Amino acid sequence: MIPERAKIKHENGEELEVMFNPDQIKYTKVNTWNYQATNGQTLPPGSFSNSAPAKLDVTLWFDGTEKGEDVSKMVDKLASFMKVDTSLANGAAAGSPRGHGQSQSQQHRPPTVTFLWGTYLSFVAVITNILGQFTLFLDDGTPVRASVAVTFQQIGDKDVFEPQNPTSGGRTGERIHRLAPRETLDQVAYESFGKTGLWRALAAYNGIDDPLRLQAGDPILLPPSVDDLKALA
Picture (cartoon, rainbow, N blue to C red):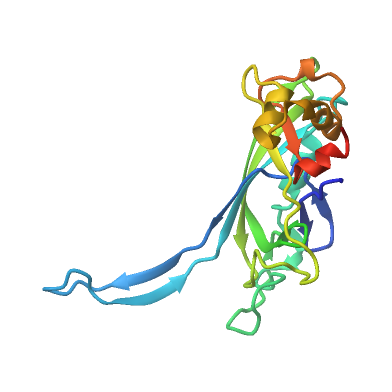
């Protein structure tokens, strides 16, 4: 089974597919309530003030060590999704409510994006922050490994984790495990699937030719279930 990749879709249709699906996603939603101090009451009555846009915080990993691939190109493409686009008028963000006091001005804005993962996650947003770290380089300075923390801020008011197709399943279940110091594939196979003998299948699933060359911090893709590994054993 080939795991389905998460992707970031520009409102013009351009897409950036991630190299490795995230191992965790942080979802934040805040409502503000105002409380007026009242003598003699432990908890004064509250009134709703406003609801802030939801946020998704995701760390994406880019690794081109196997082919000596320059990962800065993928990071640059991600950063381009934050650039102001002169073809987009401010106040007309795709996916945002219209006709509620918004006026289109001569100012321009960055694009909206949709963070997609399979049929289960669809988050219409703008990218408000990225923090990239290049952690491995070739001798000529080419960056071949990077992590990028991305913050998506909600722009479209709809369900985020509701399946988009009622006849389809949920998440693929793929995860990323990062090797600890001196951790081996057989240990990962045992801890994740209960059988050390599945290390060969795990290597095949990840396209690893020489497990002895793995280093601490290297990403290992874990399939949704042990059955996916048994098919490769």
